[in-house]
Amino acid sequence: MGRWILAATILASSMAFIDGTVVNVALPFLQTNLNATAIGIQWVVEAYSLFLSALLLVGGSLGDRYGRRRIFNLGVVIFAVASALCGMAANIEQLIAARAVQGVGGALLVPGSLALISSSFNEKERGKAIGTWSGFSAMTTAIGPVLGGWLVEHWSWRAAFFLNLPLAVAVLAISLWKVPESREKEQHGPLDWPGAALATIGLGGVIYGLIESPRLGFSNPFVLLTLIGGAVSLALFVYNEARAKNPMVPLHLFRDRNFSGANILTLFLYAALSGTFFFFTLNLIQIQHYSATAAGASLLPFVILMFSLSRWSGGLIDRFGARLPLTIGPIIAAAGFALFAVPGLSGNYWTSFFPAVVVLGLGMAISVAPLTTTVMSAVGEEQAGTASGINNAVSRTAGLLAIAVFGVMMLHGFSQTLASRIAEIPMDEQLKHSIYEQRVKLAALEVSPATDSATLEKIKVAIAESFVSGFRMIMFVSAALAVASGASSWFCITKSRRAGPKQQRD
Image (tube, rainbow, N blue to C red; front, top):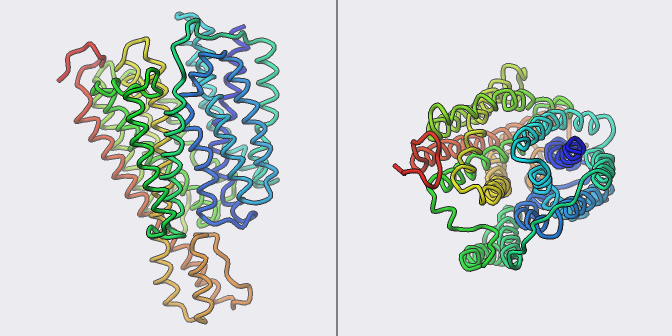
């Protein structure tokens, strides 16, 4: 029975993990195919992340209350149907709407995987089962971008979404046939639906205002309204969590220095990581002219390092305590982010991006296992699931915010450099205006086919240089965020080798 439960949860998690990595590879192709702006492809990622981040904790609670297998299967069905709708989308608006529905399915599916394992294995076997799940999940994370890149390159970007359908059928067959139902025996009051609604509205308002501000301007009344409304909703969310009987996010957990420090570190470090990966793929395919398969394989060294060093890094907290690895790891990651800013418009992968990928992978490998241990050991055993869920939600919210903020920065940097570059090229003023007006497409902007070849080549170089200029700015900001995450660890996390709520603080 245990093997079937692991098979179902591993395959289901693979759907979410593969989808998250493959979509990044598909973005440049769907942008061209659907004639989308950079803002449009941001929403392809953000629509999914918004609902996943806001509803993740509610999804776990629904499984505990109404049946973990039932809610898990519901999430798989919603995710699969939404994936099919993504693959059939005729325009960018339909794709964004389908991605939002995918996020709802993911919010039911993702917490359900580990919940089924935890409830189905006894304490002696649970650690091994979770380790097996983690190992296979890492493998699918590594294989996903390469497989997805190959499908995108040789078939269509739509394959990135249709890939989920056979996986969903297999998961449902195994789950309905072999996975037993489980739920909490006692009910603990109403679910925190007001908190979920306020989190969704708040994050949605802030993200909408940030993403649309380059197109409409921060002075636009609707942008201002959504930003202010989002901020007010998030403030009300905190107020609701402080007063709710069964809050999604029990605020008292943040009284623990280690728990607060670990989540601040998570917010900064995963914001840097998510923003980097989003724009790195665009850089490789649109500027460096990598194939989709090569772009998908470019981060394999990162995944291999994370997988191979996870056991070693998990032991660092026993030898040195949490503070040291959670300070050194992010600092090394910061060096990796800075190295991404070195390459220009051309260069061999092994001498340009490979060093950055390796250094970043090493920094993250040192950080992740001690971070997870710190989060889980900062609270009592009965609250470990809640603590893990909060940290997971923080990491996803960090990515959600980062892509929105970095998108504003990228468009600003790209536009400034583009204006100066095209001003230096002798061409018709109408052509210059046409190019600049398309700046929201970033590297995918189109030039009139009637342009002479010499001028066209200069324009392409100007566009590429403008993108690299914006990308470098984002990499330096990511490096600063990683340094800030290391600093938060140094000042917030205790020196003790095993952190816990009952231990003496510094």
